[in-house]
Image (cartoon, rainbow, N blue to C red; front, side, top):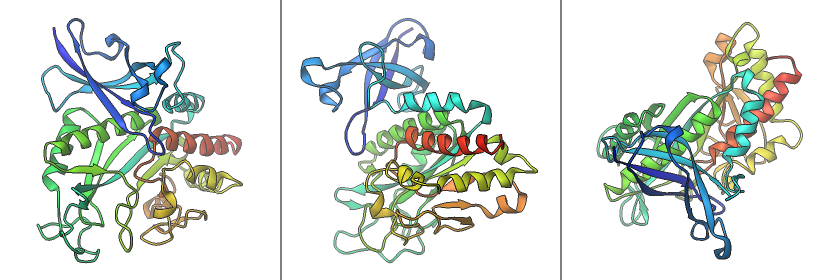
Amino acid sequence: MTFKAEYIWIDGTAPTAKLRSKTKIITDGTPALGELPLWGFDGSSTNQAEGHASDLVLRPVFVCPDPVRGGDDVLVLCEVLHTDMTPHPSNTRAALAEVSARYAAQEPVFGIEQEYTFFEGTRPLGFPVNGFPAPQGGYYCGVGVDEIHGRPVVEAHLENCLKAGLGISGINAEVMPGQWEFQVGPLAPLEVSDQLWVARWLLYRTAEDFGVAATLDPKPVKGDWNGAGAHTNFSTRAMREGPEGYDAIVTACESLGEGSKPLDHVKNYGAGIDERLTGLHETAPWDEYTYGVSDRGASVRIPWQVERDGKGYIEDRRPNANMDPYVVTRLLVDTCCEALEKAGRV
């Protein structure tokens, strides 16, 4: 059997990595993860190596059906290794794998809300050629051509994600024109991160067919317009189960505010975080840490039904749309699970 395998990886572009991909024709075997071969690439062209030692290795870590090509073709997410099979510095997945294994018994689970903005040329989709559209207000979860821009792309992307078998749990129009969101999860740390990266690749690839671009810029339009985030919902088994679930939730929230933790997290939550986390537009200031029930102006929100039920999850509202999910989930697991372990809430 012959099939096409689209090998996808994360490059070394700073401060925000880009997705790269290329196609491998495989003429034997089946498109299963354990049977997909290693492959190589030119790291000097992806900001990951020097020209005199440019060879790097792609190791498949996640495979799913390719909804764009169809048939038996597959998408293959890979991690980047040196030729001695050690993780490349740009490979943030390797560190998450270690932390996830350390705290696997606590069963951490994530749901990530990925916001993004469509652009047509140099302006957001829905913005007039000269000037600005009507102020924010009616665009969020709106309907009608006067308020919604890019729905055909969004629907095609959703369909592609579902055909790929990704754990997409919803979509909605966001606060600024041309701005949308999809949600991935609830899934374990490695699974949610792998699938978010593939969903991002599918977003860019789907938008190609419509002649528009999708960006994860956290502040795509300056001024009185909402930025784009990746609100990260998190829980452990102790947080999800009563009767002491709420105590575990408070322990997790408190741990995120201890010592240098707030700044340690924020500086790794995506480039340009200070432009988005201003204290306005449903954000907390980047250099302050707060948490509260039903408070979208806090760093971390506890949903109202979680307080009512005495168990559930928390929402870290600080991560940017351009964050690395391997990094964000690692930080949350490391900080919260360590605190819960010390408090005996596991």
